[in-house]
Amino acid sequence: MIRMRNVERAYATPAGQTYVLRRVDLDVPEGEFLTIMGPSGAGKSTLLSIIGMLDDGWTGEFSFLDHPVHTLGRKQRAALNKQHIGFVFQSYHLLDNLTVYENLELPLTYRDVKASERAALVADSLDRFGIVGKKDLFPPQLSGGQQQLVAVARAVVGNPKLILADEPTGNLHSDQGREIMALFKRLQRDGTTIVQVTHSEVNAACGDRILRLLDGWVVREPEGRGAGVASAG
Image 1 (tube, helix red, strand yellow):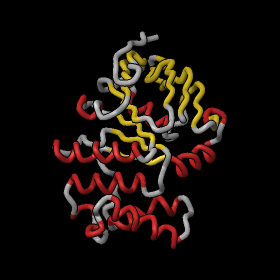
Image 2 (cartoon, helix red, strand yellow):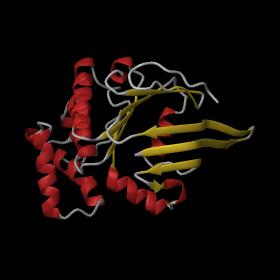
Image 3 (tube, helix red, strand yellow):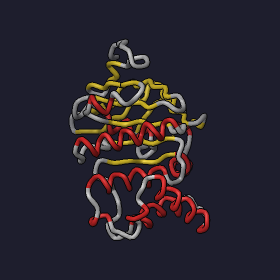
Image 4 (tube, helix red, strand yellow):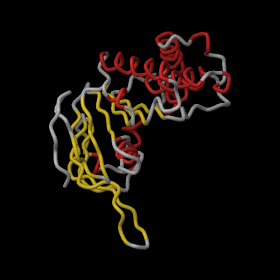
């Protein structure tokens, strides 16, 4: 599904180029649950943004579902994003002035899904996540765990092939975090590919593989659940 070769991201500073990612090679097959880990400033969120096609200032080669992203224009990348990728953020990113139902419906309107189909997809998602009773409430009326549940439901309402999650349990207590991870595992069993960024070793253990970053370099990439170290550079 994802193939990256020699991907780099740098920013211009008065002192010259400052690299956030260096020579990243990455392959993610369809159906995998990949975790990206590393200290603050390692480049984790930047890599997630590139995979999600939210950042276009990088260099290198990147293919997504056999589309050569590095050759596509911004509009073509945005179309791929809308069609195939769902996002889950630490801070939920729900719209407080929209109900739960309307928050779930919003990404479908961006994809020009017909009204009747939108209604069916939202109803199915509300039922699937057990939040039918919350559909007319606004995000501030929900607990943090409930808001994150709605955020995950919104991410998958259009049946994306890939979910990108940036610290998805960072604002939740441990029980709520376990619920979200269990939900991700169920989505993976249904065929969804998941890439998460986390500092939590507990959450990382829910995935199939860990990609470790340090100062923008890939320093460790275990094969499967076992060990195996790839040297930086």
